[in-house]
Image (cartoon, rainbow, N blue to C red; front, top):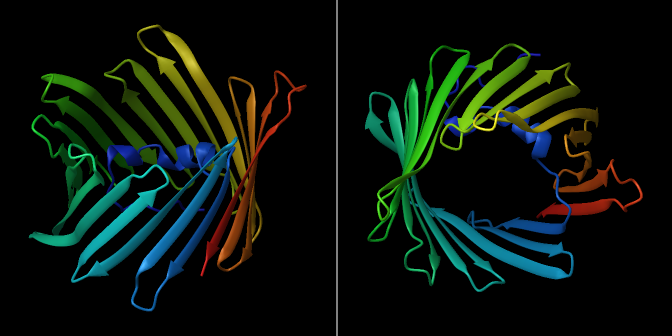
Length: 284
């Protein structure tokens, strides 16, 4: 039951991610259809459609790589065009590598951002800066203190306001069959702790608590369990402190076709109808 990732590097966003995914991933009250195709030349096209209530939205993205540079163009029903260009795996010497990502939305000239990702042992960091006259600068870093302990921090500084907008940090401990993490967020006002346990090869559980340090009050709690039913299907249930019970069933119908059925039940108002969601994923 050994958990993976003991020797991998990581960032602050990786602290507690295993538990966060168990408690939140694949839960959606909307109806979604995703179709992915890949040409013989390696051009990947992803079409997505979403129905939320009476509103229907969609997007189409095309992704390809040439001479080590990956480009992606995404078009949405809101007439927004997003462009991302990535150059990955740049050798920086001494075993370190770097990625450069340039992204922006059209026609918004101030939406552009450039991200530099540095990967080495034992430190990783991301540096993101807006491509406008008064950009925000974001930094996220992580370091392996020991094989089992990952520590990270993040900050965001807005140059136009000369103000620090974000400051936080966290630490994660990974053992053979459990992961425990603590995150300090909201400029030190919020403490989030979560715990993930792998019971066996089929069963996983997780819990999270959010505490407001300034108000000295618990702001939220959640517990969840994930069970692999067989090699192609998984079920999950998560209950939070607001009384909302989230249920999920995921089925791999064929090697390239899957569906996810979700439901949300208000346990404090059982007379209300449950909210259902459905996601279909097709790969050609």
